[in-house]
Amino acid sequence: MEKRAIDWWVGIFVLLGIAALVVLALRVGNLSGFAYNDGYVLHADFTNVGSLKVRSPVRLGGVTIGEVTHIGMDPKTFMANVTMRIEPKVKLPTDTGASIYTEGLLGEQYVAVQPGGMPQDLKPGGTITMTQSAVNIDQLIGQMVFDKASGSK
Amino acid sequence: MAFLDFVPNLGRQVLLTIPNLGAAARFLLRSLVAVINRHFSIQQLLKQVYGFGVRSLLLMMVAAFFTGMVLGFQGYYALVRFGATSALGTLVALSLLRELGPVLTALLFAGRAGSALTAEISSMKATEQLSAMEMMAVNPFAWVVAPRLWAGIIVVPILCAIFDLVGIFGGYLISVPVLGVDGGTFWAQMQSNVTFSGDILTGLFKALCFGLVVTWIAAWQGYAAQPTAEGVGNATTRSVVTASLAVLGLDFILTALLFT
Image 1 (cartoon, rainbow over the protein chains, first blue to last red):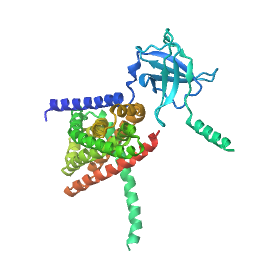
Image 2 (image 1 turned 90 degrees about the vertical axis):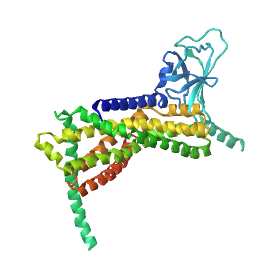
Image 3 (image 1 turned 135 degrees about the vertical axis):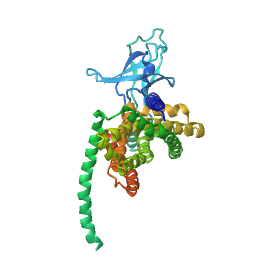
Image 4 (image 1 turned 90 degrees about the horizontal axis):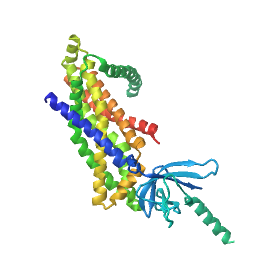
């Protein structure tokens, strides 16, 4: 085979490999987070975030409108502080509520937002005050068993 | 009497194996370092990347496609009993990225390129081409071994990335259009459970190690072969067997080390 042809083929081969890696990173891995890079930031304080993770989806009516970018702990109030990035075209009213739900019985956890009816919108960097923490299934089951046991006496 | 022979034979094997390992390690070091030798040529390296990589691309893609499709069927069969077919995308992607991609690529590479490499180097030795090079003051490590070794290190991760991608596509084709899993769930579940550094890069790092080990074993078996026609044949067989076993063993060690 001619030298130049080999150079071409090797070049194409390496490019193919890089393209495969890029597609894997964006399509299969979750590096495609730049989709929300132009979004605005909201905060919400929860007493318990359960197994919520960075990159967990934020949903409104089941539709993903953003993602969790940071989870921290406020050392004064002992509340878990969740930072989210929301698509810029979605404007949420100031009396919006946020809850942490689980997808199915054993699925992943996500933040569900319920918009309220106030005319003013939450400003970028604002805080959602009405929050409902993650449901702890262990605790629920424990409570149920305890109630059953004490009720049968 | 067979048992009485066994003990000294074992001792002899051990005594032969240890210096062999040392010689193989020195061989690897000399070949890797030979890139700075003036007889190392990029043109040779490109030729080997072409031979190892471009010419095994079709084989890898076909193998990956079928592997992915079988994973789709098999995963569906296992998951549908628990009503958990939404996890099929995750299952296909993680199996391919973490284990099947690197290991199958390396095994196929050992069969496709490693055997040819051993045969090439050992017949060079049998026909005294290597000695002839030394006579002409051409370093055979730089001219023959190093380009092949580095080509193996470069090529296997690239092949592995392509293998992963084609395999996932094959799994998708079976899961979504054929078995009726929801396409959005398939990708979304995959994306939320696969991490770039933890799964994709780990797999490619494994592939890199396998590329080094397979080409090392293949080149060493060729270099250490008996310089006869029979020796060439034996070396080729031994190369494929040793390289395959080494890949499987090393995969266990790497998985245990990188497991998170």
